[in-house]
Length: 313
Image (tube, rainbow, N blue to C red):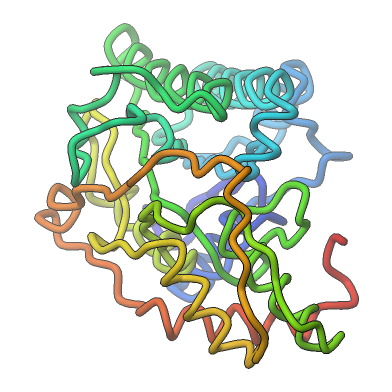
């Protein structure tokens, strides 16, 4: 990508999109396009096509989508499959019709089977059953990466897809109804601390293992892929290391400074037992994550505290 090329970043107010905008600016890209929902509602094909025809982006980094944790995925499953399918379809089709030079869309590690060999290689996709609680979201994301592959096959479009692991960082969603586990833990421990509560209740057993990628590292990886990758197969993005949720809770408790007890409510589901991505493919291309979990947590927690009054409750 040239430094002055028009680059449209969808979902620029979200966790990933805002990080991509920051990273593009940091790297000297000067022609970054963003659009609010009022300017271009990605759920409506006519609005998306009109925006693309009007703005003529050369590159598109699609960070928009409906995301959430286990609870949100399970309760609002129809919304998760419907909205993500519509957003992806509209952005991909508009990119094709308006001659976008390169597009990248994002999936999630939840596209892989529930009981998958570890670490998870890209070729393990669709080899067995998905995790039940987020099957709608996973199917939508699988459809998106398949669309990119089929547009490349039929039209020669340079459309690529990336599968990041669990994300966290500045501008995350800390709403307990819809947040992912790491953000939820930060908020729970913080509120317990400021309210002098004796304990914090967490869901599940704490035994599942997860991998966590700082969102600024993901942003750097996406720009790297836009400049260095043009294969039809999706590519994993992660750190190559995982920890148990119990270990994560212990670390966040320490970062926050909460002194009380942790109670594990085992009546709630754990989800997939383990999700660790094999990141050898992107590492071999020349990119590796560089932010440690402790460093990323400290940055995220400071941002959370500084912005607590304004975050979604």
